[in-house]
Length: 581
Image (cartoon, rainbow, N blue to C red; front, side):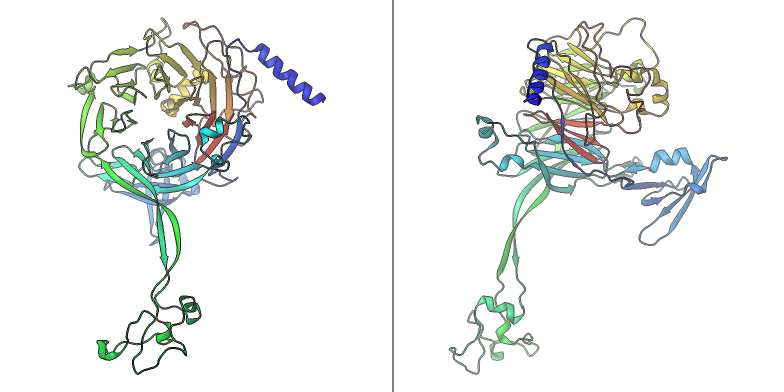
């Protein structure tokens, strides 16, 4: 009784302290994890061997012996072991140069996406593979999910997904005309409308987009032609005392094995004689998932593809690289239309590049794209065939006296997402999340500080290239919350309604709340002063209240919010973590 009363009292206090009309802060719990590494286990790695003399590149399994490193000369002996012939390649090169070239992990997740129903989840990795997961907890109650949600009693269980299938989407390629290697890494995955029980999705690497169909097919297994006579008894007796005997030999299906009927002298019965001959029979039927590449959309981008987005009409999609956005029809793979081109006549005049692009969720003629200068442009394809002129420009005015060497770098937008109703656009730059109202282009309606404690360390982050990391963002299906990733495998969830003070810090682990501390109250909504601390006492020290330093080498770049529920899927290295609230 006392325990129950204390819980009720705590809930009453929380409700009383929350602003009127603002939703309560969610309590996130661990659901499941796929691909979690055990202690001491390393991510599967490959290598890229570069011969500086002949400019040939080899993809090999790599073994590096640190004892061969000559630190005094700044050089290293790197040993490449070829699995088949065990040939050793020895190559002297500057270690810093080689390390940046050949060290990469093929198992690291590089893309993640829920489908529209939330019943399927797809991930892509740096090895060019696409892995599909399907939800299983809604199947145990009978009926569809919508009927269950209308029931009077809640389902006290967390969402559960299981591995469905995987396939190799892209392979490494080499452009001999440009002497350019094309990595197999999956940059983006987008689900398309399903039909006839089949799943459809788009996946892309730096240059090539592929349209995949994944469908269940029944595979029939047939027994061998000649089996053991003991096993053949299940097919019925082939000879018995009731059967007439003659000089001719017959099989169970009435066939005559007389040599006079055309059988050659080289014909021989199996060891069991004629009685072991029988027609093949079907032993079992198994269902397997068969992925098939329906179309390949290639040779349309001179620069690396950073975005693909499906149109609400279900027939077209866009692909964006650094300087152009192309419009495709799903049924036509050899032709696309260039709708945005920001490439100047003289490349020396280039001031910004396209970083992300996305279609409006309901209006098939509207799309938005972001730039490296921190601006978002809204485009209406009804105005002209080439949409070089935008209908609206969303850009935050720079505070006087705040400009520095890093201002333009950290202002670059790495990802944008439309809200489900299309009213708001969420953008992520290096330091902040910004929520924009498409009806108000004077500035963002909300700004969320993700990791303000990094601001004094921008010089170090520039030296190790971490300042160029591209973090993704996502919105909840109801539009009440936003989320994005950070370093040390942390991610943050913010409430974006008026008066909300929700600012939760979670860790991608089985105990997501272990690094959670009390966050300060939300400041006023004035655009000039709107900010949120990462956590109290951590803005300048780079350490949490327990004294744990933040690890800038582990970063949570990719995450996705379930379209209808408060459920998050996030990728930490090669592990997929799922949480619910």
